[in-house]
Image (cartoon, rainbow, N blue to C red):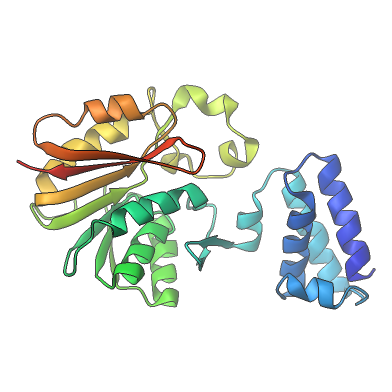
Length: 276
């Protein structure tokens, strides 16, 4: 079995199973089985696969055909130009969340203390720390997620301190300049309508917020009033149809409210300045 033949067969299997991007997925899985970058596949199309590589490739295809996300198979996801390790204990970082990064970087000043609430893989906190050259704090309710995030921070040499806790309970009063979060915002009632890759494999604690999908926003905005310094910023990623109710939660004490849209024109980030 050559590299070229393995790619053709894998692509066909994935295509017949209506897996998105079948050719790209086959390439990523085969490159992972061979412990090489994807470009290696095009440079060595006639190379014969070893028995071990063929077994691994077959297993990876089997897992993907049964719904397991490619990122959990390979253990990697790129975010903001960096490679992050991911496991089923953390949400897979999405490209849309890079809008939250850009909005945050526009508001972080030298010396600011940044807090990422619900850090998961640590992608947000690590990226902000590296891009702004400042120290960040990150909190998550899942100790397993914190293990993944801390390993990513160590590997990428990011200055981030991690805390276990529910939202901002572990953070000191009036200590934060910029609070950033991509919180759980999927209503429990939407469970059945999610893609199987999300519903069956990604951590529910990072997905579901309650019956309306707004419960974590409500708690986070209220708790932010305690930990933010006067003039500090709150930035949250928005879920589908959440802009109006979340903006409605920002009443007295909040100003300079701004909404930023993603490339599809959807409201993606809500920013507000704390003005007690």
